Length: 240
Image (cartoon, rainbow, N blue to C red; front, side):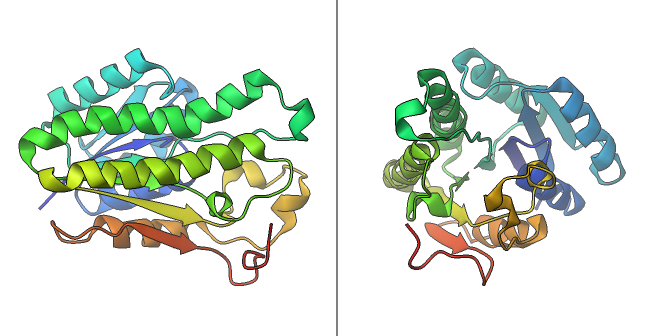
């Protein structure tokens, strides 16, 4: 049976890879992002598998009005919401004493506030249906921080906490909430970043998509609460 999914940050990286796979399986997918140009390029890439089952919405998940428009539009076009993937995020770092409030708020907005706003909107649609699944894309930084990443680390710890709180609230309504914590993924921004961290062992987007599908494909009434997926050679145990 086909499902309806909303994927934030769906114009590139993990979000785009997951959207492509769900569309190829016959699901209906709504992807959002802040850049209309990137969304247009994503839609062109997905055209071969999408048919009339793809919708793009320009939205900043840190803006409440944008999120309300995103979910009301998705509901009007595709009906019930089965899946939400909170994938949107941002990274900004540096020594704590030099981290600006603007950078902190940008990371918190994309990673944590956006996950809250979208989960709240999804719950409002899923509760009447008595079912639904929310998948948050976290990070191994939620367990093993890197140096000079206070905003990102705090945001991803928050996403992990939000996941557990939402799973608790959702279970009596048939709503499952889980969190997938990736290690290094070879997404577009890493290809020519020049950062030392982006020279570390990487895994493909497809690897994370497979893990996400394993969590999303659990039967109703079964919650895949948490998973960590990372390259075998990436430093994790003993890091931090």
